[in-house]
Image (tube, rainbow, N blue to C red; front, side, top):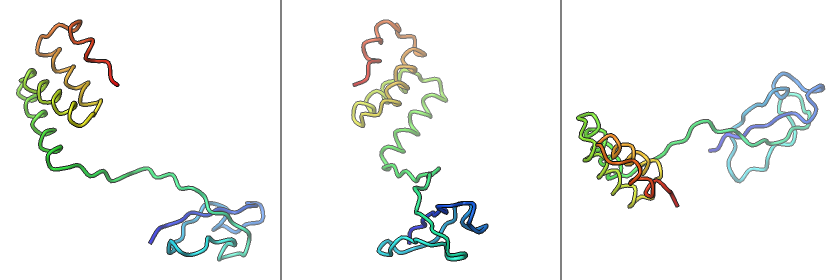
Length: 121
């Protein structure tokens, strides 16, 4: 069940619970609270600021990222760059594309020749 946050419409008349935001677990089909369960003052539901998210990646993505990191640890810059470049083309991941360009530079490729590839769509 989701956790919802509520706050008092009038903090000056509210109790300690609703003077600050409070959380409550409710079924998604339940009506939002309109009054504080502790003091009966009017409350409103507020949008929570989620500070963390779970991001699931595919096994292939994780494998490629590990391989790029392994190449980088071994200073195999051109191998890391080529794999990151191919991976970024496939996934359209801009950060991996920039990582590939950085590795190409470390491998000794001319930065000016790489400039046209640095432009992202």
